[in-house]
Length: 288
Image (tube, rainbow, N blue to C red; front, side):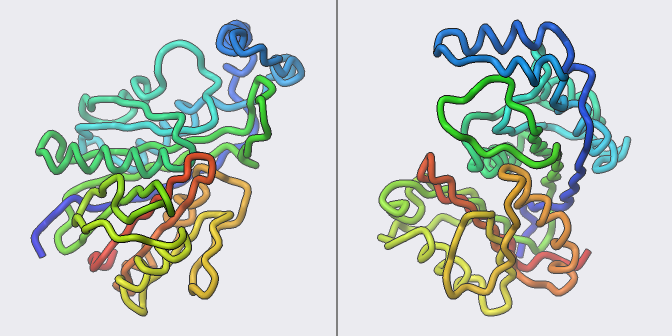
């Protein structure tokens, strides 16, 4: 199998406490300006207490751990669902200074749990076009929402950051898919990065996950996000509590062992608000 973009490193870090930026008076001004057109009240208690964590502080040290000074990144994509506590300059630009090279810095949000997969698709697209040799994806979530949402939303139990490094990895096939529609209607309805399959009708999210797991073989390791139920499938289920980073933290913990056993891997998550099923498959990666 020829060399292709692969997932070479996955690191995760949790944090407690808060950032001093959570007490910055500009945070209140920034959030108030954002929610005023929608008539949403501020969480004055959280703003007064100083609750929340800045994503730059969460991820900068992890980036330095993931990439050495002689490993420059060409692209850095930050993805998040819950907002940062740092108003002003985009955190992705600040994080781009925490790794070697001068990577193109992008940020992606407002895509729910599908955002992490979308960021990986973008990173792999940069690599496949030859623009980037090494692409980095930074995922982050923090526990505080400084306004009252119009409907209940899931917030994490702890602050967390995950760094994924995408590089050429001989012998590995990495595919990221995002399907939406009836079933999400038809498989491959929004396309995939990796091998392209023809669209076929599918009956349910669970059936599509089972189909992809079956394609990987009986020894496949399957990792399911919290809340995704696939009856009859032997899988590791991520506990609730970290809606955006939990799946990827579990991958960071388990991937070295699965690679040593040369097992294909399937990750799956379904965002019911968007109706999007996101999956990632790794085939035939070399042992760590």
